[in-house]
Structures are given as structure tokens and as C-alpha cells.
Length: 393
Image 1 (tube, rainbow, N blue to C red):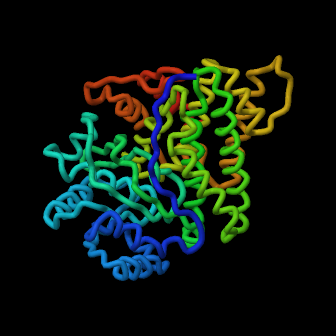
Image 2: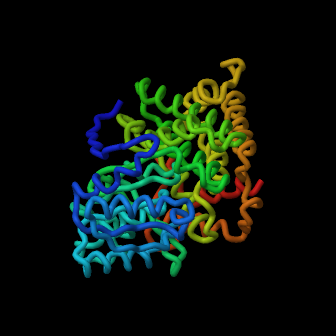
């Protein structure tokens, strides 16, 4: 196990009716806030009216900025930065899913910076201070409600870039599973895929002596798959949504990666799908992940065997480790299909003649900044191309 330094101060308010506390929680932080949300779903569900009533009752003034899209755009982030500067706003309340929260984080880190926000993302410039923010989660998936991470996109150059810094961790996050009942059903599948990938990025490691976090990863993965299948057939099952919502939070709060090298190749590989084709992140991950697994599994066959046995329930002779590992990957693909997720580029409408460009963009060689992806196996652009080719089959 590696050394680690961990601190997570996000206050989680979990359960039925907890959105009613948003006014008092926000008032503890600021008298005036930026209320940031998406394209109107919180108004259709009635959540918007509840939030406004709570803020008004607590005496919190607010300025609204709506319009966040999936794969949040830097153009709206820049607009939010200007609003906060003009209105002297020092706190952001994000009401929505991961895209809304990521957009809010990007705004928070840009307000006091002299650099353009996109340059900060591209160059990885350090962020030592940012505006504080709170969240009401309406879609469990990204774990952004308690993480230090954010991802935004730029339509002009078809790029999607991630960033992380401790000041971006929300002060509080409200998680009421009842708020998930009004989601489109495909958001359940995308969310399950995303949170599972957050665990995979930590679980598949060359670090040894990680028994506790291995077990935590395996338990979280089994919980997500079990309850996602329950919700597929019983969408308003509160208990199953509670398990999914809690799992999404645990998957990306930093706990599961403690003491172990994390990989993050799959996320970087998938970002090119979202950047060019605006693919839902979870849908892209369900295609990329099995191909990545098949390509890298021989680098550390025992961890893939462990996954197959302890998570996917594969039986077989341990003398045939490769066979067991492949069966685990096959069963994962079977789960994706049972949830209605894609497993090939054809299902996503991605053209094979674009995959070399995507491989070069993912590794930044297309921009003269070549980098290798991943830790389990370091991947060049040629490796990424082979993984994309596996997605075409």
C-alpha cells in the first residue's frame, strides 16, 4: 500500500425531503449566491420552486444561470465567471447532475484567476483558491458532489478536459433519492456505468497489499449492479435508488483509491468520444471499458481474475487464469447489455475513419504534447488506437 494524504470535508445531507434544508445550509455560507442549473428539468419536477422557497425563507439573494448541457461547455462557464465578478458573488449553488456541478466548479475556480479558464484546464495550472459551492444532486453518476474533480468541453476545438484541485470539493451536498424518480430511464444506465468506471480506475492497479480497498471496491461494484437491475424493472424503488446514490458518492469521494496507484486511461480515452460526438459519458465508457480490459489484462492477470471471481461470480479452474479473466469481462458486457448500454462504436454511430485522430487527441500528440495514458499499462497513441479498434468489433 502506498502512502496517502486524504481530507474530505463535504457535508452530506442524505434522505427524503432533505432539499428543504438548502436555504439554511446556504445562508451559513453566503447572503448572495449564483444559482446554477441545467435546461429546465428541475422546473418540470418542482424542485426549482422548492429551492427558491427555501432560499427566500432563509433570506438568501440569488442570481440565476441556467443552460448547462451534458458535457458542460466552457462558453457558459465564462458567462458564469463574469456574472460572479459583476455581482460580487462568492458562493455557487449547483442544482443538477454532474455536468451542472462540474460547470459550477469551473466557474468557482475562474472568478479570482487572471487566466482564461480554458487555459487553466489545458495547462493544468494550480488552483489554490476558489469560490465555495454547495450542491443538490439530481442524478447519481459522476460523484462530483464530493470530489475535487471537474470536466468541461470546448466546442471550438472539440476537446474535453478534466481538472482537479482540493478547493473544488463542495462544502455541502444534498442527496435525496426521491429526486431521482423523475430522471429519464437512460440516465440510470449512464450513471451506473460512470460510477462503476470510477471504481475500475482505482481497482485495476499494480499496487499490492490493498485488501481493504479491494474489498470496498468489490462491494460497491456488486451493489451498483444489483440495484441498477432492480431499478431497471422498478424505477421508483426508493431503497434501490438510495443504494445507487450512496454508491455514486462513495465511488468518487477519494476513499476507494487510497494507498493505490490509480489508472484513469478509460476516462481519457472516452473523453474523445464525448468531445467529437457528444456521446453520453456513461455510454462511451460501457464501450471503451471492455476493450481496454482485454487489451491490458495480461499486465496484471491476477487482479482481473479477482474481479471475475469476486465481482462477476465466475467459476473455473485457477490454472486457467486468462480464461477466467475473459469470462469476467464477457459477463460485464452482458450486464451492460442487460441495462441497455452500448458495447460497440457502431451502436454509438462512431465512424472508424475517426479513431486514429481520436487516439492522437487522447494522448495529445495531435497538439504536440504527447503523453502516455494509464498506470496499469502505459498507453501510447498506437495502444489507444488498438483499444478503439477493439470497440469496432
